Length: 130
Image 1 (cartoon, rainbow, N blue to C red):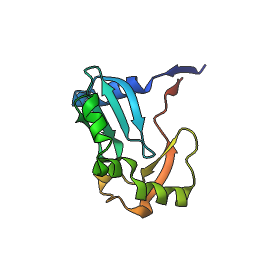
Image 2: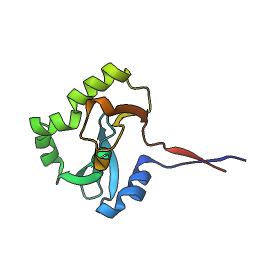
Image 3: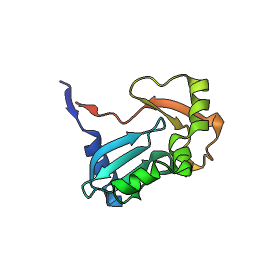
Image 4: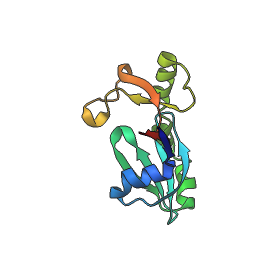
């Protein structure tokens, strides 16, 4: 018999990233490469960047987040426009539940190469247990 159990994205973040000190409350944004913007229980905002394996505070409060949302350097990094445009041209539009990603994560040596972009399912909330 196959038993299905589901984890919310918040539970996955708690389980996988608690070592950085995050206490997530809500995912407030995500980009096409699976980066997440997360509000914690203290009102701080964190960026989770899976390709660079980090999760760090980017704004101490809502006011700082609003200021950050006007920062062109942050926005260029967040939207990854050149990579997103290349990925859409090479791989097509994302299917529901999918994200683009580096074929080799930058932590393992990829230097954000345009030639090494792929697409796959984003974090799967439901898993089967046998």
